[in-house]
Length: 176
Ligand SMILES: [Zn+2]
Image (cartoon, rainbow, N blue to C red; front, top):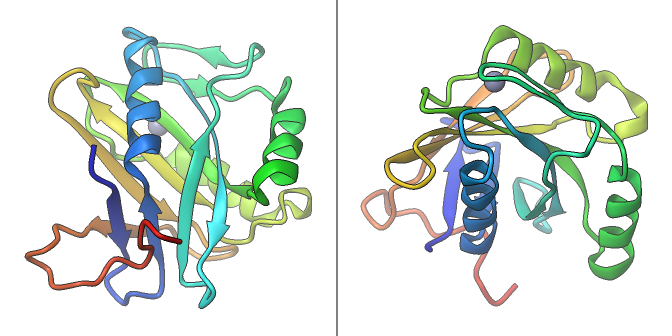
C-alpha cells in the first residue's frame, strides 16, 4: 500500500500517511460494517514543522458510541495508549480520524466543530489538529479526506498529492 500525502493549496500544511497506517485505517473500517468508527492519530512533525507524519491510529475505545452516521469517540484506555506511543516512539497526539461507511468523506459541521474544540483545549497540546475521514467501501473503492483545523480558524481542506504527476517531493521520505 503506497503512502498518501496531502497538502493545503498554500503548502503551509502537509500530512503524510504511511502505507501501513492507511492499511490499519481500512482494516478498522472493514471490521466496523455499516457503523461509523474512529479514533485518534499520533505521530510527529518534520524538522520544518510543516509536515505531520501519522505513524499510528487507534481503534475505537470501548466507551465510543457508534451509529450508522454518527460517532462519538470515547476516551477509555487512550491515555495509556498515548503514553506507550510517546515512550516507545516519541509520538504525540496529532488529531482524529473516523469512518463514513459507504458515504463521501466530507466532514459534517459537527466533525469540524469537534476538531475546533480540540484545537482550543489546552490539554490536547495540539492547536492545529488533523482530521482524516475514510469514506466509501473500505474493501473496494475508498477515499480518504484530510483537513487541518487551526485554532480559531476555519478548517483547511488538504488535497491528495497525486505524485509523481504533481512534481512534489514527498515531505517525508521512508528513510526518516
Ligand atoms: Zn463525520
